[in-house]
Length: 621
Image 1 (cartoon, rainbow, N blue to C red):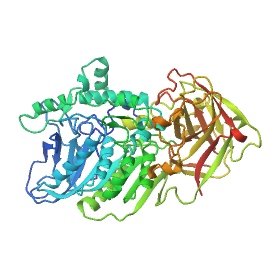
Image 2 (image 1 turned 60 degrees about the vertical axis):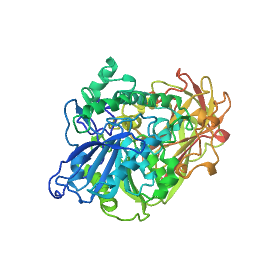
Image 3 (image 1 turned 135 degrees about the horizontal axis):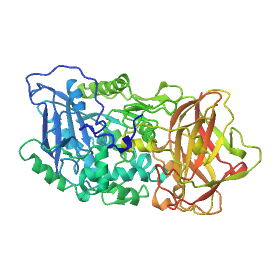
Image 4 (image 1 turned 45 degrees about the horizontal axis):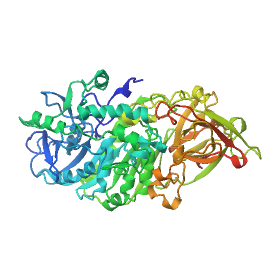
Protein backbone atom coordinates (compact mmCIF):
# COMPACT_ATOMS: atom_id res chain seq x y z
CA UNK A 1 0.00 0.00 0.00
CA UNK A 2 1.23 3.45 -0.87
CA UNK A 3 2.24 5.41 2.21
CA UNK A 4 3.14 9.03 2.78
CA UNK A 5 1.06 10.25 -0.13
CA UNK A 6 -0.92 12.52 2.15
CA UNK A 7 2.22 14.58 1.83
CA UNK A 8 1.77 15.00 -1.91
CA UNK A 9 0.39 18.02 -3.67
CA UNK A 10 -3.34 18.33 -4.36
CA UNK A 11 -4.56 15.98 -7.02
CA UNK A 12 -4.57 18.26 -10.03
CA UNK A 13 -0.86 19.04 -10.40
CA UNK A 14 0.27 16.82 -13.27
CA UNK A 15 2.54 19.19 -15.07
CA UNK A 16 5.57 17.86 -13.19
CA UNK A 17 6.66 14.39 -12.19
CA UNK A 18 5.81 15.09 -8.54
CA UNK A 19 2.11 15.57 -9.06
CA UNK A 20 -1.01 13.60 -9.70
CA UNK A 21 -3.33 14.27 -12.69
CA UNK A 22 -4.38 17.49 -14.42
CA UNK A 23 -7.19 16.25 -16.60
CA UNK A 24 -8.69 13.06 -17.85
CA UNK A 25 -6.49 12.09 -20.77
CA UNK A 26 -7.95 9.82 -23.42
CA UNK A 27 -6.24 6.84 -24.90
CA UNK A 28 -4.35 7.98 -27.94
CA UNK A 29 -4.43 7.25 -31.63
CA UNK A 30 -4.62 9.55 -34.61
CA UNK A 31 -2.23 10.83 -37.20
CA UNK A 32 -0.65 14.28 -37.64
CA UNK A 33 -2.38 17.02 -39.60
CA UNK A 34 -0.37 18.78 -42.34
CA UNK A 35 3.16 20.22 -42.20
CA UNK A 36 5.02 20.42 -38.90
CA UNK A 37 4.59 23.31 -36.49
CA UNK A 38 5.90 23.69 -32.95
CA UNK A 39 3.90 21.42 -30.69
CA UNK A 40 4.03 23.65 -27.61
CA UNK A 41 3.78 27.41 -27.28
CA UNK A 42 3.77 29.20 -23.93
CA UNK A 43 2.42 32.72 -24.08
CA UNK A 44 0.20 35.31 -22.43
CA UNK A 45 -3.42 36.00 -23.28
CA UNK A 46 -4.72 39.36 -22.08
CA UNK A 47 -8.09 39.51 -20.32
CA UNK A 48 -10.53 42.43 -20.84
CA UNK A 49 -9.31 44.07 -17.61
CA UNK A 50 -5.68 43.90 -18.77
CA UNK A 51 -4.55 40.96 -16.63
CA UNK A 52 -2.25 38.63 -18.58
CA UNK A 53 -2.97 34.91 -18.25
CA UNK A 54 -0.19 32.39 -18.94
CA UNK A 55 -1.25 29.57 -21.24
CA UNK A 56 0.41 26.53 -22.76
CA UNK A 57 -0.98 25.71 -26.19
CA UNK A 58 -0.34 22.18 -27.43
CA UNK A 59 -1.19 21.33 -31.05
CA UNK A 60 -0.94 18.01 -32.86
CA UNK A 61 2.34 17.69 -34.69
CA UNK A 62 2.11 19.25 -38.13
CA UNK A 63 -0.94 21.42 -37.41
CA UNK A 64 -1.41 24.35 -39.77
CA UNK A 65 -3.88 27.19 -40.20
CA UNK A 66 -7.30 25.95 -41.20
CA UNK A 67 -6.94 22.65 -39.34
CA UNK A 68 -10.26 23.25 -37.53
CA UNK A 69 -9.23 21.51 -34.33
CA UNK A 70 -11.52 20.96 -31.34
CA UNK A 71 -9.94 22.27 -28.13
CA UNK A 72 -9.71 21.02 -24.56
CA UNK A 73 -9.34 23.83 -22.01
CA UNK A 74 -8.04 23.35 -18.46
CA UNK A 75 -7.75 26.30 -16.07
CA UNK A 76 -5.37 25.35 -13.30
CA UNK A 77 -4.87 26.54 -9.73
CA UNK A 78 -1.67 24.57 -9.08
CA UNK A 79 0.57 25.78 -11.95
CA UNK A 80 -0.04 24.70 -15.53
CA UNK A 81 3.51 23.27 -15.58
CA UNK A 82 6.32 23.00 -13.02
CA UNK A 83 9.92 23.29 -14.20
CA UNK A 84 13.38 23.90 -12.83
CA UNK A 85 14.81 27.38 -13.27
CA UNK A 86 16.59 27.67 -16.59
CA UNK A 87 14.68 24.72 -18.08
CA UNK A 88 11.57 24.72 -20.26
CA UNK A 89 10.17 21.40 -19.09
CA UNK A 90 8.61 18.71 -21.21
CA UNK A 91 5.21 18.02 -22.70
CA UNK A 92 2.56 16.87 -20.24
CA UNK A 93 1.18 13.37 -20.71
CA UNK A 94 -2.35 14.74 -20.87
CA UNK A 95 -1.37 17.09 -23.69
CA UNK A 96 0.42 14.32 -25.54
CA UNK A 97 -2.60 12.05 -25.43
CA UNK A 98 -5.18 14.69 -26.35
CA UNK A 99 -3.16 15.98 -29.28
CA UNK A 100 -2.64 12.43 -30.51
CA UNK A 101 -6.43 12.31 -30.87
CA UNK A 102 -6.40 15.46 -32.98
CA UNK A 103 -7.34 17.96 -30.26
CA UNK A 104 -5.65 21.19 -29.32
CA UNK A 105 -4.92 21.17 -25.60
CA UNK A 106 -4.77 24.49 -23.77
CA UNK A 107 -3.91 24.74 -20.09
CA UNK A 108 -3.87 28.09 -18.30
CA UNK A 109 -2.68 29.32 -14.93
CA UNK A 110 -5.58 31.02 -13.16
CA UNK A 111 -5.09 34.71 -12.57
CA UNK A 112 -3.00 35.27 -9.48
CA UNK A 113 -1.33 31.86 -9.78
CA UNK A 114 1.61 30.25 -11.60
CA UNK A 115 3.00 32.55 -14.28
CA UNK A 116 -0.23 34.52 -14.69
CA UNK A 117 -0.44 38.11 -13.52
CA UNK A 118 -3.05 39.43 -11.12
CA UNK A 119 -4.00 38.77 -7.51
CA UNK A 120 -6.34 36.02 -6.39
CA UNK A 121 -8.95 37.95 -4.45
CA UNK A 122 -10.98 34.84 -3.64
CA UNK A 123 -10.60 31.11 -4.14
CA UNK A 124 -12.96 30.14 -6.99
CA UNK A 125 -13.80 33.84 -7.22
CA UNK A 126 -15.97 35.55 -9.80
CA UNK A 127 -13.03 36.93 -11.80
CA UNK A 128 -11.34 33.51 -11.93
CA UNK A 129 -14.51 31.95 -13.33
CA UNK A 130 -15.09 34.80 -15.76
CA UNK A 131 -11.64 34.40 -17.36
CA UNK A 132 -12.73 31.13 -19.01
CA UNK A 133 -14.95 33.20 -21.30
CA UNK A 134 -12.24 35.40 -22.89
CA UNK A 135 -9.90 32.40 -23.01
CA UNK A 136 -12.51 30.45 -24.98
CA UNK A 137 -13.06 33.45 -27.27
CA UNK A 138 -9.31 33.66 -27.85
CA UNK A 139 -9.11 29.94 -28.66
CA UNK A 140 -12.02 30.21 -31.10
CA UNK A 141 -10.19 33.01 -32.91
CA UNK A 142 -7.05 30.94 -33.58
CA UNK A 143 -6.55 29.89 -37.20
CA UNK A 144 -6.35 26.22 -36.15
CA UNK A 145 -9.62 26.20 -34.12
CA UNK A 146 -13.04 24.84 -35.03
CA UNK A 147 -14.54 27.36 -32.60
CA UNK A 148 -15.62 24.73 -30.07
CA UNK A 149 -14.15 24.28 -26.59
CA UNK A 150 -14.60 21.56 -23.99
CA UNK A 151 -13.67 22.38 -20.40
CA UNK A 152 -12.31 19.71 -18.10
CA UNK A 153 -10.07 19.21 -15.09
CA UNK A 154 -9.71 17.37 -11.81
CA UNK A 155 -10.53 18.84 -8.41
CA UNK A 156 -10.03 22.62 -8.53
CA UNK A 157 -9.66 22.36 -12.31
CA UNK A 158 -12.95 20.48 -12.34
CA UNK A 159 -14.56 23.22 -10.25
CA UNK A 160 -13.53 25.89 -12.74
CA UNK A 161 -14.50 23.68 -15.69
CA UNK A 162 -18.04 23.35 -14.33
CA UNK A 163 -18.34 26.99 -13.25
CA UNK A 164 -17.42 28.00 -16.81
CA UNK A 165 -20.72 26.50 -18.01
CA UNK A 166 -22.52 29.37 -16.25
CA UNK A 167 -20.90 32.03 -18.47
CA UNK A 168 -23.18 31.63 -21.48
CA UNK A 169 -20.14 31.52 -23.76
CA UNK A 170 -21.25 29.93 -27.04
CA UNK A 171 -17.77 28.51 -27.73
CA UNK A 172 -17.97 26.27 -24.62
CA UNK A 173 -19.92 23.28 -25.91
CA UNK A 174 -19.19 20.60 -23.28
CA UNK A 175 -17.80 20.17 -19.79
CA UNK A 176 -16.27 17.09 -18.13
CA UNK A 177 -15.37 17.94 -14.52
CA UNK A 178 -13.77 15.15 -12.50
CA UNK A 179 -13.96 14.96 -8.69
CA UNK A 180 -15.28 18.49 -8.48
CA UNK A 181 -16.85 20.30 -5.53
CA UNK A 182 -20.42 21.31 -6.40
CA UNK A 183 -20.73 23.40 -3.24
CA UNK A 184 -17.37 24.05 -1.55
CA UNK A 185 -18.95 24.92 1.81
CA UNK A 186 -21.18 21.86 2.26
CA UNK A 187 -19.31 19.33 0.15
CA UNK A 188 -15.73 19.94 1.25
CA UNK A 189 -14.57 22.65 3.64
CA UNK A 190 -17.43 22.76 6.16
CA UNK A 191 -19.70 19.73 5.73
CA UNK A 192 -22.49 20.05 8.25
CA UNK A 193 -20.95 23.40 9.20
CA UNK A 194 -17.88 21.69 10.76
CA UNK A 195 -14.45 22.76 9.49
CA UNK A 196 -12.09 20.07 8.13
CA UNK A 197 -9.39 21.88 10.09
CA UNK A 198 -6.58 19.28 10.19
CA UNK A 199 -6.87 18.77 6.43
CA UNK A 200 -7.20 22.37 5.28
CA UNK A 201 -4.30 23.70 7.37
CA UNK A 202 -1.67 21.78 5.43
CA UNK A 203 -3.39 22.46 2.11
CA UNK A 204 -3.37 26.17 2.88
CA UNK A 205 0.38 26.12 3.48
CA UNK A 206 0.92 24.40 0.12
CA UNK A 207 -1.06 27.17 -1.56
CA UNK A 208 0.99 29.86 0.16
CA UNK A 209 4.22 28.28 -1.06
CA UNK A 210 2.87 27.90 -4.59
CA UNK A 211 1.82 31.56 -4.63
CA UNK A 212 4.75 32.88 -2.58
CA UNK A 213 1.95 34.60 -0.64
CA UNK A 214 3.32 36.89 2.02
CA UNK A 215 6.79 35.98 0.77
CA UNK A 216 6.38 32.30 1.74
CA UNK A 217 8.75 30.00 -0.17
CA UNK A 218 10.26 26.58 0.23
CA UNK A 219 13.12 28.25 2.11
CA UNK A 220 11.05 30.30 4.56
CA UNK A 221 11.64 27.99 7.53
CA UNK A 222 12.12 24.37 8.49
CA UNK A 223 8.42 23.58 8.09
CA UNK A 224 8.27 24.86 4.51
CA UNK A 225 11.53 23.12 3.64
CA UNK A 226 10.11 19.84 4.92
CA UNK A 227 6.83 20.42 3.12
CA UNK A 228 8.51 21.14 -0.20
CA UNK A 229 10.76 18.11 0.13
CA UNK A 230 7.78 15.90 0.90
CA UNK A 231 5.59 17.11 -1.97
CA UNK A 232 8.40 17.49 -4.48
CA UNK A 233 8.33 21.27 -4.86
CA UNK A 234 11.97 21.93 -3.94
CA UNK A 235 13.74 23.70 -6.78
CA UNK A 236 10.65 24.04 -8.95
CA UNK A 237 8.87 27.09 -10.37
CA UNK A 238 5.98 27.72 -12.76
CA UNK A 239 6.91 27.47 -16.43
CA UNK A 240 7.76 30.93 -17.83
CA UNK A 241 6.26 31.97 -21.16
CA UNK A 242 8.45 31.70 -24.25
CA UNK A 243 10.98 34.34 -25.17
CA UNK A 244 14.00 36.08 -23.64
CA UNK A 245 11.81 38.00 -21.15
CA UNK A 246 10.01 34.92 -19.87
CA UNK A 247 11.89 34.65 -16.59
CA UNK A 248 11.56 38.36 -15.84
CA UNK A 249 7.85 38.26 -16.61
CA UNK A 250 7.46 35.25 -14.32
CA UNK A 251 9.10 37.14 -11.47
CA UNK A 252 6.87 40.17 -12.08
CA UNK A 253 3.75 38.02 -12.19
CA UNK A 254 4.61 36.13 -9.01
CA UNK A 255 5.20 39.40 -7.18
CA UNK A 256 1.50 40.15 -7.69
CA UNK A 257 0.56 36.89 -5.95
CA UNK A 258 2.00 37.91 -2.59
CA UNK A 259 -1.34 39.36 -1.49
CA UNK A 260 -3.47 36.40 -2.61
CA UNK A 261 -6.49 35.53 -0.52
CA UNK A 262 -5.72 33.15 2.34
CA UNK A 263 -7.92 30.06 2.21
CA UNK A 264 -7.16 29.03 5.79
CA UNK A 265 -8.14 32.44 7.15
CA UNK A 266 -11.38 32.33 5.20
CA UNK A 267 -12.07 28.76 6.33
CA UNK A 268 -11.77 29.81 9.97
CA UNK A 269 -13.50 33.17 9.66
CA UNK A 270 -16.23 32.02 7.31
CA UNK A 271 -18.08 29.92 9.85
CA UNK A 272 -21.43 30.38 8.12
CA UNK A 273 -22.42 29.80 4.54
CA UNK A 274 -23.52 33.42 4.06
CA UNK A 275 -20.06 34.72 5.00
CA UNK A 276 -18.85 37.51 2.76
CA UNK A 277 -15.75 39.69 2.90
CA UNK A 278 -15.51 41.80 -0.24
CA UNK A 279 -15.05 39.35 -3.14
CA UNK A 280 -14.60 36.42 -0.74
CA UNK A 281 -17.59 34.18 -0.06
CA UNK A 282 -18.60 30.55 -0.02
CA UNK A 283 -21.38 31.08 -2.53
CA UNK A 284 -19.33 32.68 -5.31
CA UNK A 285 -17.72 29.34 -6.16
CA UNK A 286 -20.86 27.24 -5.71
CA UNK A 287 -22.46 25.71 -8.79
CA UNK A 288 -25.63 25.56 -6.72
CA UNK A 289 -25.75 29.35 -6.66
CA UNK A 290 -25.42 29.47 -10.47
CA UNK A 291 -28.02 26.89 -11.46
CA UNK A 292 -30.13 29.36 -13.48
CA UNK A 293 -27.11 30.47 -15.51
CA UNK A 294 -25.85 26.90 -16.01
CA UNK A 295 -29.27 25.77 -17.22
CA UNK A 296 -29.56 28.78 -19.54
CA UNK A 297 -26.22 27.87 -21.13
CA UNK A 298 -27.47 24.32 -21.92
CA UNK A 299 -23.92 22.95 -21.90
CA UNK A 300 -23.94 19.13 -21.72
CA UNK A 301 -21.99 17.75 -18.76
CA UNK A 302 -20.13 14.50 -18.10
CA UNK A 303 -19.30 14.20 -14.41
CA UNK A 304 -17.50 11.57 -12.36
CA UNK A 305 -16.91 11.27 -8.63
CA UNK A 306 -16.23 8.68 -5.94
CA UNK A 307 -18.65 7.60 -3.24
CA UNK A 308 -15.85 8.06 -0.68
CA UNK A 309 -14.33 11.27 -2.10
CA UNK A 310 -15.31 13.94 0.45
CA UNK A 311 -18.80 15.17 -0.59
CA UNK A 312 -18.28 15.00 -4.36
CA UNK A 313 -20.90 12.26 -4.82
CA UNK A 314 -23.41 14.42 -2.96
CA UNK A 315 -22.50 17.18 -5.40
CA UNK A 316 -23.07 14.98 -8.44
CA UNK A 317 -26.54 14.05 -7.16
CA UNK A 318 -27.28 17.72 -6.44
CA UNK A 319 -26.25 18.48 -10.00
CA UNK A 320 -28.48 15.70 -11.33
CA UNK A 321 -31.57 16.69 -9.33
CA UNK A 322 -31.00 20.45 -9.56
CA UNK A 323 -29.93 21.00 -13.20
CA UNK A 324 -31.89 20.19 -16.35
CA UNK A 325 -28.77 20.10 -18.56
CA UNK A 326 -27.97 16.99 -20.58
CA UNK A 327 -25.91 14.89 -18.17
CA UNK A 328 -23.96 11.65 -18.01
CA UNK A 329 -22.99 11.22 -14.36
CA UNK A 330 -20.79 8.49 -12.89
CA UNK A 331 -20.34 7.67 -9.21
CA UNK A 332 -17.83 4.91 -8.66
CA UNK A 333 -15.49 3.21 -6.19
CA UNK A 334 -12.79 5.83 -6.61
CA UNK A 335 -10.61 8.14 -4.58
CA UNK A 336 -10.20 11.81 -5.51
CA UNK A 337 -9.06 11.90 -9.11
CA UNK A 338 -10.10 8.29 -9.75
CA UNK A 339 -6.59 6.85 -9.53
CA UNK A 340 -7.33 4.28 -6.79
CA UNK A 341 -10.05 1.74 -6.15
CA UNK A 342 -12.02 2.85 -3.07
CA UNK A 343 -14.46 0.10 -2.14
CA UNK A 344 -14.36 -0.39 1.65
CA UNK A 345 -14.95 -4.12 1.24
CA UNK A 346 -11.88 -4.52 -1.01
CA UNK A 347 -8.20 -3.65 -0.54
CA UNK A 348 -7.19 -0.27 -1.95
CA UNK A 349 -5.23 -0.57 -5.19
CA UNK A 350 -4.37 1.60 -8.19
CA UNK A 351 -6.85 1.31 -11.03
CA UNK A 352 -5.77 -1.09 -13.71
CA UNK A 353 -4.81 0.14 -17.17
CA UNK A 354 -8.13 -1.16 -18.48
CA UNK A 355 -10.11 0.69 -15.79
CA UNK A 356 -8.27 3.93 -16.51
CA UNK A 357 -8.84 3.50 -20.23
CA UNK A 358 -12.58 2.97 -19.66
CA UNK A 359 -12.80 6.17 -17.64
CA UNK A 360 -10.76 8.07 -20.23
CA UNK A 361 -12.78 6.74 -23.14
CA UNK A 362 -16.00 8.14 -21.72
CA UNK A 363 -14.56 11.65 -21.77
CA UNK A 364 -13.12 11.16 -25.24
CA UNK A 365 -16.43 9.93 -26.67
CA UNK A 366 -18.30 12.78 -24.98
CA UNK A 367 -15.96 15.43 -26.38
CA UNK A 368 -15.93 13.79 -29.80
CA UNK A 369 -19.69 14.24 -29.87
CA UNK A 370 -19.97 17.79 -28.55
CA UNK A 371 -16.56 19.43 -29.21
CA UNK A 372 -15.14 17.69 -32.27
CA UNK A 373 -18.66 17.22 -33.61
CA UNK A 374 -21.58 19.61 -33.43
CA UNK A 375 -24.20 17.40 -31.80
CA UNK A 376 -26.90 19.25 -29.95
CA UNK A 377 -27.69 18.31 -26.33
CA UNK A 378 -30.51 15.76 -26.41
CA UNK A 379 -31.78 16.29 -22.86
CA UNK A 380 -30.82 12.79 -21.73
CA UNK A 381 -29.90 12.62 -18.06
CA UNK A 382 -28.44 9.48 -16.48
CA UNK A 383 -26.61 8.45 -13.34
CA UNK A 384 -24.37 5.37 -13.47
CA UNK A 385 -23.50 4.12 -9.99
CA UNK A 386 -21.52 1.32 -8.40
CA UNK A 387 -22.73 -0.67 -5.38
CA UNK A 388 -20.28 -1.57 -2.62
CA UNK A 389 -20.11 -5.21 -1.46
CA UNK A 390 -21.67 -6.25 -4.77
CA UNK A 391 -19.38 -4.78 -7.43
CA UNK A 392 -22.30 -4.08 -9.77
CA UNK A 393 -22.85 -0.97 -11.91
CA UNK A 394 -26.41 0.26 -12.52
CA UNK A 395 -27.90 3.10 -14.55
CA UNK A 396 -30.92 5.22 -13.73
CA UNK A 397 -32.62 8.29 -15.18
CA UNK A 398 -34.31 9.09 -11.86
CA UNK A 399 -33.08 9.80 -8.36
CA UNK A 400 -34.02 8.42 -5.88
CA UNK A 401 -33.85 5.30 -8.01
CA UNK A 402 -37.15 3.57 -8.84
CA UNK A 403 -38.24 1.10 -6.20
CA UNK A 404 -36.73 3.07 -3.32
CA UNK A 405 -38.57 3.12 -0.01
CA UNK A 406 -37.50 4.68 3.24
CA UNK A 407 -36.87 2.12 5.97
CA UNK A 408 -36.75 3.35 9.55
CA UNK A 409 -34.50 1.84 12.21
CA UNK A 410 -35.16 2.86 15.81
CA UNK A 411 -32.40 3.26 18.40
CA UNK A 412 -33.20 1.30 21.54
CA UNK A 413 -32.01 -0.03 24.85
CA UNK A 414 -28.73 -1.90 25.00
CA UNK A 415 -27.44 -0.47 21.74
CA UNK A 416 -30.15 -2.05 19.61
CA UNK A 417 -31.32 -0.84 16.21
CA UNK A 418 -34.68 -2.22 15.16
CA UNK A 419 -37.34 -1.74 12.52
CA UNK A 420 -39.93 -1.03 15.22
CA UNK A 421 -39.85 1.01 18.42
CA UNK A 422 -39.09 -0.92 21.59
CA UNK A 423 -42.65 -0.88 22.95
CA UNK A 424 -43.28 2.06 25.29
CA UNK A 425 -39.81 2.02 26.82
CA UNK A 426 -37.83 5.23 26.80
CA UNK A 427 -34.34 6.03 27.91
CA UNK A 428 -31.09 7.70 26.96
CA UNK A 429 -27.40 6.91 26.67
CA UNK A 430 -24.46 9.06 27.69
CA UNK A 431 -22.18 10.25 24.89
CA UNK A 432 -18.83 11.76 25.83
CA UNK A 433 -16.59 13.53 23.38
CA UNK A 434 -13.57 11.29 22.78
CA UNK A 435 -10.75 13.25 21.10
CA UNK A 436 -9.01 10.01 20.07
CA UNK A 437 -11.83 8.32 18.13
CA UNK A 438 -11.33 9.32 14.50
CA UNK A 439 -11.55 7.87 11.01
CA UNK A 440 -7.81 7.54 10.35
CA UNK A 441 -5.25 9.29 8.14
CA UNK A 442 -6.64 8.03 4.82
CA UNK A 443 -10.32 8.86 5.10
CA UNK A 444 -12.64 10.50 2.56
CA UNK A 445 -11.77 14.06 3.68
CA UNK A 446 -8.04 13.49 3.22
CA UNK A 447 -8.20 12.25 -0.37
CA UNK A 448 -9.84 15.41 -1.72
CA UNK A 449 -6.84 17.49 -0.69
CA UNK A 450 -4.13 14.92 -1.35
CA UNK A 451 -5.20 12.41 -3.99
CA UNK A 452 -4.40 9.58 -1.56
CA UNK A 453 -6.14 6.24 -1.58
CA UNK A 454 -9.10 5.87 0.81
CA UNK A 455 -8.61 3.27 3.54
CA UNK A 456 -10.85 2.61 6.54
CA UNK A 457 -9.46 -0.12 8.81
CA UNK A 458 -11.78 -2.38 10.80
CA UNK A 459 -13.66 0.05 13.06
CA UNK A 460 -14.51 -2.37 15.85
CA UNK A 461 -11.92 -0.88 18.23
CA UNK A 462 -12.96 2.71 17.49
CA UNK A 463 -16.65 1.85 17.87
CA UNK A 464 -15.94 0.53 21.35
CA UNK A 465 -15.17 4.11 22.39
CA UNK A 466 -18.43 5.47 20.96
CA UNK A 467 -22.18 4.92 21.09
CA UNK A 468 -23.22 2.13 18.74
CA UNK A 469 -26.65 0.82 17.80
CA UNK A 470 -26.78 -2.45 15.85
CA UNK A 471 -29.51 -4.52 14.21
CA UNK A 472 -29.99 -8.24 14.55
CA UNK A 473 -28.47 -10.24 11.67
CA UNK A 474 -30.35 -9.46 8.46
CA UNK A 475 -32.51 -12.28 7.13
CA UNK A 476 -32.19 -11.16 3.50
CA UNK A 477 -29.84 -9.15 1.32
CA UNK A 478 -30.66 -5.45 1.65
CA UNK A 479 -29.49 -2.87 -0.88
CA UNK A 480 -29.26 0.74 0.27
CA UNK A 481 -28.81 3.42 -2.40
CA UNK A 482 -29.10 7.14 -1.84
CA UNK A 483 -29.15 9.71 0.93
CA UNK A 484 -29.88 8.49 4.43
CA UNK A 485 -30.67 10.62 7.46
CA UNK A 486 -30.30 10.33 11.21
CA UNK A 487 -32.65 12.12 13.62
CA UNK A 488 -31.38 12.11 17.18
CA UNK A 489 -32.99 13.14 20.43
CA UNK A 490 -30.12 15.15 21.93
CA UNK A 491 -29.86 16.62 25.40
CA UNK A 492 -26.86 18.88 25.78
CA UNK A 493 -24.84 18.54 28.98
CA UNK A 494 -21.63 20.24 30.09
CA UNK A 495 -19.65 21.86 27.26
CA UNK A 496 -22.15 21.03 24.53
CA UNK A 497 -23.59 24.46 23.75
CA UNK A 498 -21.34 24.83 20.68
CA UNK A 499 -20.61 21.20 20.05
CA UNK A 500 -20.96 18.88 17.07
CA UNK A 501 -22.14 15.37 16.38
CA UNK A 502 -20.76 12.82 13.90
CA UNK A 503 -22.65 9.70 12.82
CA UNK A 504 -21.37 6.67 10.90
CA UNK A 505 -23.24 4.01 8.95
CA UNK A 506 -21.39 0.69 9.13
CA UNK A 507 -21.67 -2.97 8.16
CA UNK A 508 -20.94 -5.58 10.82
CA UNK A 509 -19.95 -8.93 9.33
CA UNK A 510 -20.68 -12.26 11.04
CA UNK A 511 -17.02 -12.46 12.11
CA UNK A 512 -17.32 -9.06 13.86
CA UNK A 513 -15.42 -6.95 11.32
CA UNK A 514 -16.88 -3.43 11.11
CA UNK A 515 -16.76 -1.75 7.71
CA UNK A 516 -17.25 2.00 7.32
CA UNK A 517 -19.81 2.94 4.67
CA UNK A 518 -20.67 6.61 5.03
CA UNK A 519 -21.14 9.38 7.56
CA UNK A 520 -22.69 12.71 8.44
CA UNK A 521 -21.83 15.52 10.80
CA UNK A 522 -23.42 18.69 12.10
CA UNK A 523 -22.31 21.71 14.07
CA UNK A 524 -25.16 21.80 16.56
CA UNK A 525 -25.44 25.57 16.29
CA UNK A 526 -26.65 24.94 12.70
CA UNK A 527 -29.39 22.47 13.66
CA UNK A 528 -32.30 24.75 12.64
CA UNK A 529 -34.41 23.28 9.86
CA UNK A 530 -35.90 25.63 7.28
CA UNK A 531 -39.18 25.42 5.42
CA UNK A 532 -38.88 22.87 2.61
CA UNK A 533 -40.30 25.45 0.20
CA UNK A 534 -37.20 27.55 0.85
CA UNK A 535 -34.88 24.70 -0.10
CA UNK A 536 -33.47 25.22 -3.62
CA UNK A 537 -33.75 22.38 -6.11
CA UNK A 538 -30.09 21.46 -5.82
CA UNK A 539 -30.63 20.81 -2.08
CA UNK A 540 -33.78 18.72 -2.46
CA UNK A 541 -31.92 15.59 -1.26
CA UNK A 542 -30.61 17.45 1.80
CA UNK A 543 -32.39 18.59 4.95
CA UNK A 544 -33.61 22.17 4.42
CA UNK A 545 -30.97 24.17 6.25
CA UNK A 546 -29.37 27.56 5.61
CA UNK A 547 -26.13 27.41 7.63
CA UNK A 548 -26.64 31.19 7.85
CA UNK A 549 -25.38 33.27 10.76
CA UNK A 550 -28.86 34.55 11.62
CA UNK A 551 -30.18 31.00 12.02
CA UNK A 552 -27.37 29.78 14.28
CA UNK A 553 -28.05 29.25 17.98
CA UNK A 554 -26.29 27.52 20.85
CA UNK A 555 -27.63 24.13 21.88
CA UNK A 556 -29.74 24.55 25.04
CA UNK A 557 -28.43 22.75 28.09
CA UNK A 558 -30.57 20.12 29.77
CA UNK A 559 -33.49 20.26 27.31
CA UNK A 560 -34.00 17.57 24.65
CA UNK A 561 -33.72 18.73 21.03
CA UNK A 562 -34.46 16.89 17.80
CA UNK A 563 -31.39 17.08 15.58
CA UNK A 564 -31.41 15.92 11.93
CA UNK A 565 -28.08 14.90 10.38
CA UNK A 566 -27.80 14.04 6.68
CA UNK A 567 -25.65 11.09 5.68
CA UNK A 568 -23.41 11.34 2.63
CA UNK A 569 -25.00 9.23 -0.12
CA UNK A 570 -23.87 5.67 -0.70
CA UNK A 571 -24.85 2.50 -2.53
CA UNK A 572 -24.13 -0.70 -0.62
CA UNK A 573 -25.41 -4.24 -0.34
CA UNK A 574 -25.88 -5.53 3.23
CA UNK A 575 -25.76 -9.28 2.87
CA UNK A 576 -27.98 -11.67 4.78
CA UNK A 577 -26.30 -12.43 8.09
CA UNK A 578 -24.63 -9.03 8.31
CA UNK A 579 -25.83 -6.37 10.73
CA UNK A 580 -26.40 -2.64 10.19
CA UNK A 581 -24.77 -0.35 12.72
CA UNK A 582 -25.19 3.35 13.45
CA UNK A 583 -22.38 4.83 15.53
CA UNK A 584 -22.64 8.24 17.16
CA UNK A 585 -19.62 10.36 18.11
CA UNK A 586 -18.99 13.90 19.31
CA UNK A 587 -15.72 14.37 17.40
CA UNK A 588 -13.57 13.14 14.52
CA UNK A 589 -10.13 14.55 15.37
CA UNK A 590 -8.47 13.13 12.25
CA UNK A 591 -10.41 15.36 9.86
CA UNK A 592 -12.49 17.92 11.78
CA UNK A 593 -12.09 20.73 14.26
CA UNK A 594 -13.05 19.90 17.82
CA UNK A 595 -16.27 21.56 18.91
CA UNK A 596 -15.87 22.83 21.56
CA UNK A 597 -12.19 23.54 21.09
CA UNK A 598 -11.19 22.17 24.49
CA UNK A 599 -12.56 18.76 23.53
CA UNK A 600 -14.88 18.48 26.53
CA UNK A 601 -18.59 17.93 25.95
CA UNK A 602 -21.24 15.46 27.07
CA UNK A 603 -24.65 14.61 25.63
CA UNK A 604 -27.48 12.23 26.25
CA UNK A 605 -28.93 10.49 23.19
CA UNK A 606 -32.56 9.56 23.78
CA UNK A 607 -34.51 6.61 22.45
CA UNK A 608 -38.07 5.24 22.62
CA UNK A 609 -41.45 6.97 22.85
CA UNK A 610 -41.28 10.73 22.55
CA UNK A 611 -37.48 10.49 22.92
CA UNK A 612 -37.23 8.45 19.70
CA UNK A 613 -34.02 8.60 17.65
CA UNK A 614 -34.14 7.02 14.20
CA UNK A 615 -31.99 6.09 11.23
CA UNK A 616 -33.68 6.45 7.82
CA UNK A 617 -32.20 4.48 4.93
CA UNK A 618 -33.24 4.42 1.25
CA UNK A 619 -33.75 0.70 0.63
CA UNK A 620 -34.18 -0.43 -2.98
CA UNK A 621 -36.35 -3.45 -3.69
